[in-house]
Image (cartoon, rainbow, N blue to C red; front, side, top):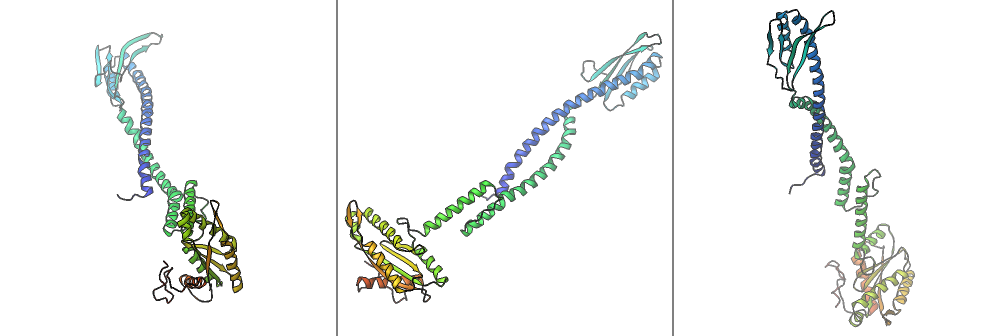
Length: 387
């Protein structure tokens, strides 16, 4: 299916409406123009008839048939006159020019020819009949629609130009900026104040959803803690700032029996409780993440002295060894914690976690090598996965 630009669809929907408006306006205007023309023509016919009658009376009274015939012939030269007839009383004959008027036609007008002498006496000389050309509605339409069409086309050009400019400014450009932000997966902030409310609302919704998606991509849904991606981002940030500190890596001993004995709901509750206790043990600018399963990590920047890191390990150990109640049954777990320092070299997150992992297993007193992370195959600290 071919892609249609928004303004193209806008114009395709706008043009029929404009055409319909023009047709309705033209029909109404034509009707009004026709009625006005009928009134005008009626007045013109009455004036023409009265004028012809006034000019014709004197020759007919004087029995000047030649002059009367000339006048009647001249009448037919008028643009709206088809025929004229009048009775010559002296010659007792009908003087006629053009088409013989039809008395029953609405386009034929007649008036009596009366001569008033010096004494005031009225003498009837007959009747003047004039057949006029009928007023055609098509003539009225052609006379009214031509200027209307010119005005309509001019207005249409102005309306379309203004509509396109307004559409581009109020809709096209904001949508283009929003699409570009979406392609870059970036928030559009701040939202321009002159944008339409609807587009601003859509943009705000996009910003909110993007922020929520970013949060979900960096946080563990069960505990609400950060995940591996957030850990790497925070490590990159503190490394770029030249900050030194420690990374604590810990997992929970005797966690698997919790799931086996009490079920996964109990295991989830234990993990959530551990996350809350870890947050209570660290500072506001420290970062606590869940790497997966029963494994957690803590980034503690600005803990340059080992004593500060040791104090943090002591607090965490004390907090996590406290019993966790599950349906009035206490559950006991203990953490194994490994510690490594960052900021002294260019070690990446995999290397730092591998070092903390090794330190954690030394704390466990285990001798077999296991691989929990995926450092490069050439890394001498590579271990097989834990069983």
